[in-house]
Length: 344
Ligand code: GTP
Ligand code: MG
Image 1: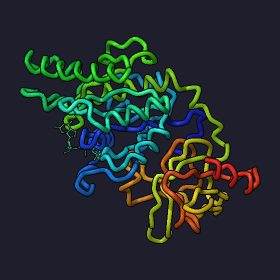
Image 2 (image 1 turned 30 degrees about the vertical axis):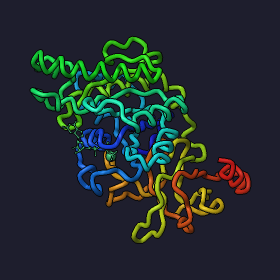
Image 3 (image 1 turned 180 degrees about the vertical axis):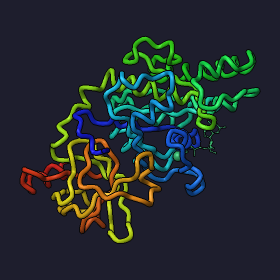
Image 4 (image 1 turned 90 degrees about the vertical axis):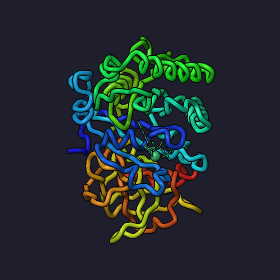
């Protein structure tokens, strides 16, 4: 049952970074699928959402995680484009996020959209960790598929290890120039004061267990209170994308971050000209671990609780707007909610 009867919602994790630094590949590895290969020119042009349940996370993290330490239901990852022309999408992803992963190619280090992402995270006060990706491209690297990074480091030659270290310290220096004190994540004592850097490879999966462990740990330690929501309250979300769906007409792919949306609910959706008042005809959920952006098989559900990605089918959504709010009316007046949506 993915409608979360519990009172703790899934933290929303935005994945940000420069074009081609490996955001989608990292999520592909976590999902065990290949969205990146299916994309036009392999460049992400939209925001995506993928729900990763706790049992999948603990399965991947292996010995690093004891799932009984956690009562959060998992992590909802938001993929964002790194291409320079998509800055509004990055800002939207950053604004939605409870925490973030800043993906940096270990060889390229900081690039223009890395800086832009850091600015978004600073502005929104979003805690983040750095995924120092493509560790496998270090000359002489001896890949240790899916292993924790320290175990993988032990299998490397002194030369490979020191080349990777050099690149990692370069990134730590660049973070420091950007005003963030950072260190390799296993040296960080206080994640509220220091940014953890996780060396990893989206290609081989080494270091991915570490990233998942750090993200779960951070969420559990520092965000549990914010994650406690009234699961029966009126649903609130943000439109990622407006899309035609066969048999449904215009639909909105939405990230629900508070409360619950039920089939038949009256909702107010931000539109290109004015808020749209409509009634939910169908709630279409991607399968667990599926990316809403590329999913073709949806499951019709009666309700969906935060946090989750869901496709909402309802009349008159063709003038809905990406980035706009979605609000369930429930026990308030329509006028009240329309004013709320206008004010956003
Ligand atoms: P945008 O969505 O366009 O911003 O790019 P992205 O950050 O999602 O990058 P993407 O995952 O599409 O990867 C870009 C390229 O880098 C692809 O060719 C990937 O196969 C490659 N790549 C990603 N991660 C790794 C890695 O860990 N190791 C190696 N060797 N290649 C990688
Ligand atoms: Mg991408």
